[in-house]
Length: 339
Image 1 (cartoon, rainbow, N blue to C red):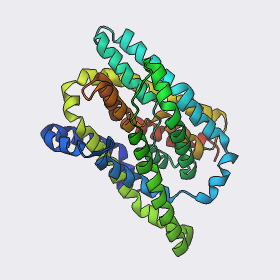
Image 2 (image 1 turned 180 degrees about the horizontal axis):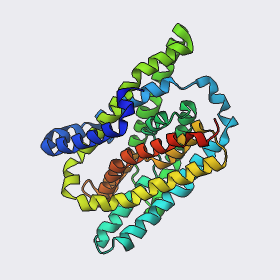
Image 3 (image 1 turned 90 degrees about the vertical axis):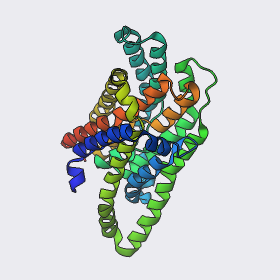
Image 4 (image 1 turned 45 degrees about the vertical axis):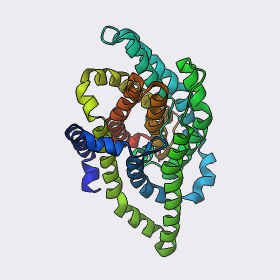
């Protein structure tokens, strides 16, 4: 294990701190970087996420895809948690905290806006970052790919109706170009590149050559993660410093949601005797969010400076440290699962 991987939590903390400092010292520079978008997908972030995902896609064994149906339990857990539990638990937590627990601290209009942002996060399962979480938990890359792909397919049809019901809105302008482009950038393109690379390496030196090549790329994946974290925190550096209390209040239900959803999925997988390499990604996919889509929809529905947009951004800020802690917990409890 390399230097970066051994102290990943420390490096991420430093990346967060660097992002906050740089975002406040050079807000103009980060504004320019944030403006580099295509269909509301930030191109710099897209490249960095691609750098993270590509080495993992090389590990995908297409020959084993036909056997995914032999292990349906992981898929059942992921789909149940993502579509039947997570969106509704998120709205319940939002109402509990912003309309009752924090009622004296937040204006009613702001509370409703924050709840809307939480709903958008809860209804958007992760597409990109989950590959790095699965990799860090030594999950099965092929199974992870299938889980993400099925979720993406369902999201195309289910995201808008679920959000419409929970928001009480009947006409939602879902940025389909953002959704489609994100799937292409974060799943399709790295998958094609990984497949081509794996085929070439396998023809050259077999599975051993594949393992050696991916091992050399591991530091690149971690560097991509750290750069992504620094950039995301740099984008919101001024907001975080200007509204620390609001950020903290929004983070509370998000943190409870994340650990609660993970506990449900991970505990279910353990009770159902799901192998760890499938159980860990299943729980991590259910816990993380497709923040690119959530942020884009919040901006299109409520505006760039709305409470809903702010809530989705806080979701990004909360996710990285929370997911790292859950990866660490999963690895720590690995021995309690069957292989």
